[in-house]
Each structure stands twice: as structure tokens, then as C-alpha cells.
Image 1 (tube, rainbow, N blue to C red):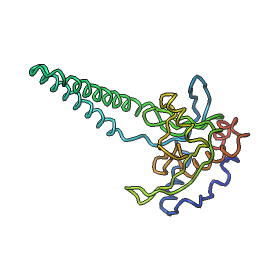
Image 2 (cartoon, one colour):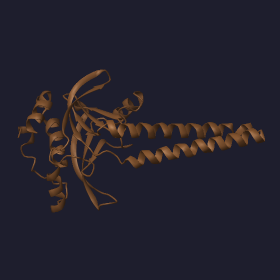
Image 3 (spheres, rainbow, N blue to C red):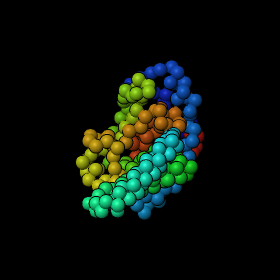
Image 4 (cartoon, one colour):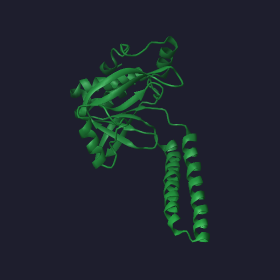
Length: 235
């Protein structure tokens, strides 16, 4: 085991303890952790993927059905417009076609990504990249990060989840950059410093290990150049 993983048994004070939950964490271990190369904004780097679970396929299917419903409504409305010569309703046709096309394409991309893309956190020497189930990327430079924060949040299916979040130094500047870059760095939360939040429920690997790895490399910039070698040796 590498120095990066030393002390990972330390339980964050902000997390709640449950014996069954902890056993589940340990059973996951380093499952799915892999070295990947990623190209973002013309910069290609090797990084370590801390994998998350893929969103359920049914979500993409539901989006697809919604898309077909909107397209069908557009056809019906267009027929009514032609029969009644009510050309003002063409705007509604265009709106339904637009919504239907967007949701159908999103569904198709989601189904393709379900087979090809593994969501998770990618740690590279210069950045932390949050990759969603659809392949969308949220990029945070290490230099932008203010803190890796552990906390517990109440949820619906289970009374609570242990979480960790990435807070940035300049939330407003981060979001302005996201808007300029077309949302490629868009934060998941509209306000506040937290731009990435990770639930224990979504991690394929042990979420405690994931938290400590991200926290370790945040606190030790001199070791980031060897991220892939260190984690590879530790696995």
C-alpha cells in the first residue's frame, strides 16, 4: 500500500458511522479504479479514475419516450394548424419539435454513454475532472480548490448519506468561466463554494478511500505528478 493510502482508516468526524455501511465500504475496496488518458481543452493527461455507478438505463429510456411524445404532439398540432389555417400556432409546433428533438438526442446519447462511459472523478496532475454518466465533464484545476470537505446529508431512500465536496476559492469566477466556456465547467450547485459533491451511494469503490485520495493530493501538490504511478502501485 502506498503512502497516499496510509491512514485511510481515519474516519471523518463529519461522517456518521454504521457498522453495516462500513462493511459495505470495505467490500468495495479499489473496485474499478483505473488509469486513463483524457483530453480536455486540447490538453492531454493521464489520470486515475475513481469510478462511480452508472445512472440507471431507464432514465435514458424515459427521456426517449418523452421526446417521442413531444414530437407526436408537434405533428398533431401541425395538422391542426394546416386544417384551421391558424398559422400563429406554428410557434407551438416549433417549440414541441425543439423539446422533442433535444430529449430524444439526450436519450440516445445517454444510452450510448451507458455502454462506453464510466462516470467518476478523474485525478490528473493539474486537475480534478468530474465525468457524468453522459460523458459531460466538469473541470476544476487543483489551484482553484479551497477545500475537500466531508459532511453528511439527509436523503430520501436512506435517512442520510456520507458525502464529500470540492469547494473552490472563487465560486463566482468559476461560474463566470463556466458560462463563457458553454457550461463545460458548470457547477452542480447554483450558489456557494461547492462545485462538486460526491455521495457514498454513487461510488463503485470504497468512498472513504476516494475521499482520502482526493484530499491527499489536494494537500500534497508535490506528489501530483506521480498520481498514476502511486495509485497503480497501491492497487
